[in-house]
Amino acid sequence: MKTSAQGFTGLHMLLSTSAFFCVVIAVNVTMAFYASSSWSGLVVENTYVASQEFNRKAAAMK
Image 1: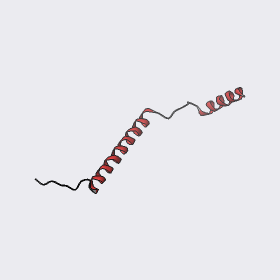
Image 2: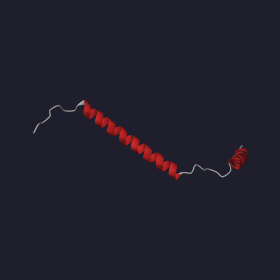
Image 3: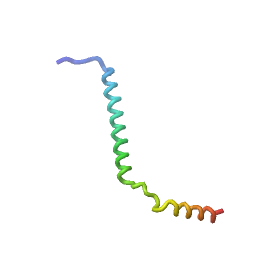
Image 4: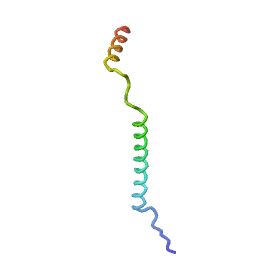
């Protein structure tokens, strides 16, 4: 049986850095998937009507 006394090599650094970025990318892809599947992007039915209501409320507050 051969034992290696090299310690932490460049290959170990490459593998650990690659593993770190793989985890980060996997988490980002998962979060992006859940974000896009859970929100339709629809805030109001009619943006023109919503803007008119906002203008009325802003004028009333003045």
